Image 1 (spheres, rainbow, N blue to C red):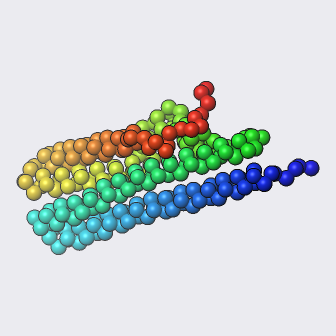
Image 2 (image 1 turned 45 degrees about the vertical axis):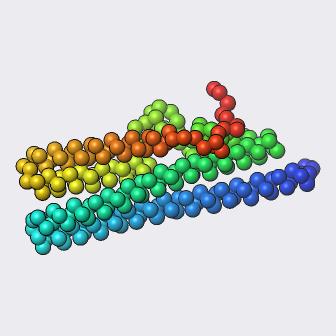
Image 3 (image 1 turned 180 degrees about the vertical axis):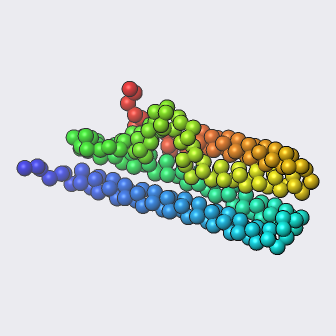
Length: 224
């Protein structure tokens, strides 16, 4: 028959479990806001496309349509950049909550090390530990080392959409200046490439930004 835990150990478990549930609730709110932000942006984009379609029918793609389209797409571009910026911040927040839960899991194992075989998530508060908890394969072909992984994330997906909006604005500006069809296509392609590259550099810098001292690993993963 197992002996009941000591009062001090029971109190520690209760405090750790309460904090764990608090972090889980915070992560849930983070996901909810992320999806809400994406839905708002897509709604703005859809409404803009419908409005431009109605203007095109009335103006037959004339000068008025070009002017209205540029202004409308600039508003959509602003909404897209603001959405990506907030998603990057939310992803960093989620990373913080995951590290916090890993530290709590490490405390569970300090109290009851015999439970380690029952955990599939990580008790280590460094990047490999966080990725293991998130279920991300860190191998070169399938994990964060794969270029395709960037486009699977919400900021990466929206970055491509925002770059396409910039390309459309570039094409409309070329039309407004009376460039030939080849010039319009080149303007759209160049604007898309510059926007996509800028978004990629932005996302990379945000990921490699200054490290918060509170996120420094206290329980790093063992070297293998």
